[in-house]
Image (cartoon, rainbow, N blue to C red; front, side, top):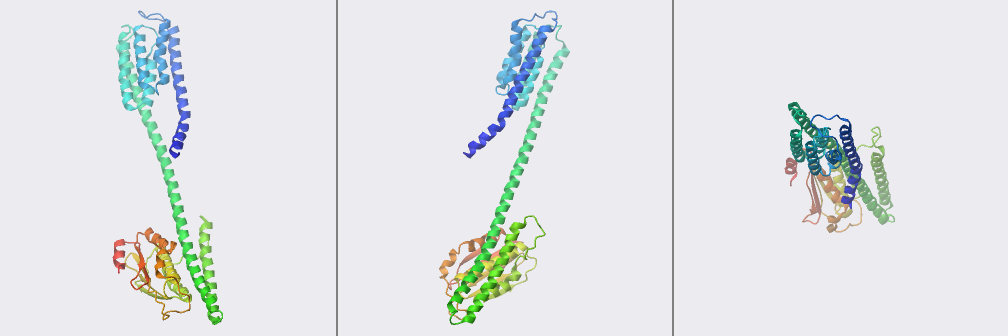
Length: 417
C-alpha cells in the first residue's frame, strides 16, 4: 500500500504539469497552423509558385499539428510532419514551412532523450534539404540553405542546453529534498538516542533507590520489635535514599523541560569521583564494598565518566538485590579508557554482613536482571567498548567492562585479566 500511495502521490503531482504541457503544445501547433494559413492567404506568389488550394491547408495541418503530440509520440510526429513538409514543398506553395519544423525540433530536443533528439535533427535536416531542393531555383539561394540548416542546428542545441539545465535544477531540488530528509532522519535518531539515554538514567536511579529502599524496609520490618535502633537506622537510610532519588529525577526531568534554555540550573552530573559516596550509601544498606583503583582519573570525557558511574551503580544494585553481602570493585585507568570489574562471591556466612538483611534469590537469576545488564551493554556499546557478565566458579557473579575514549586496543589489553 505504501508503494501504491507513493506512486499515486507522484502521479497527482505530475498531472497538472502534464495538462499544462499538453495545452502549451496544442496552442503552439494551432498558432503555427494559423501563421501558415495567414501566409497562404495573403502572401504574394513568386514565379513558378502555385496558388493556394485546400490541399495546401491540409498539408499545412500535417506539418504543424503533430507538434501537439510530440511529447507522447516524438518520432511519429516527426515522420508525419516531415512527409507533409516534403509534399508541401513539391506543391510550390507560398508560405514558408520552416518555422513549424524548428518548433517541432525544439519540442523533441526538450522532451525526448538525447538519442531521439539527435535522430530527429538528422531527419529534420534531411526533410528541410529535400524541401529546399524542390523549390524553384530563384526562390531558394545558397544563403537560404545555410541559414535554414544553421537555424535548425541552433534550435537543436538550444533545446539540449535547456533540457540539461532543467535536469540540473531538478537534481539540485532533489538533492536539497534528500538533505532535508537526512536532517529529519538524523534529528529523529538523535531524539531516539536521547530518549534511550534518559530511560537508562531513570532506570538506574529508580532501580538503585528502590533496591536500597526495599532492603532497608525489609530490615526495619524484621527487627522493629527486637532492635528498634536498627529499624530507626534503616528508616533513616530510606529517607536519605528517597530524597537523593527525587533530586536526581528532578534533574533528569529538568533536562526534558529546559529545551534550549542554557540558563537552567541543574545538579552536577555524577561521575567516578562520586563512587566513594555511592559505596557509603550501599554500606548503609548493608552491603560491604571493597574498592581498588589502579591509576588516576585524568582527562575522562563527561559521557564516559557518567556511563562508568552508572555501570558501577547498576552492578552494586544487582549485588545488593541478588548477590552476597560483599562486593569488590576494581577501577583501572589505562591510557585512553576506563576498565571496570565488579564481582561478589555470594557467601552468606555472616562474616561480612553489616546488617541482618534477608537473603536474596539464587545467583542463577542474575542472568535475567531485565534492563540492568542490557542497559550496561548499551552504555558500553556507545563507546565501542567490551562487556562481559556471568557467574564465577565460586558461585558468585562478575561483570567486566571497558569504556575507551582513545585507542580501544590499548584499553582492552590494559584491562584484560
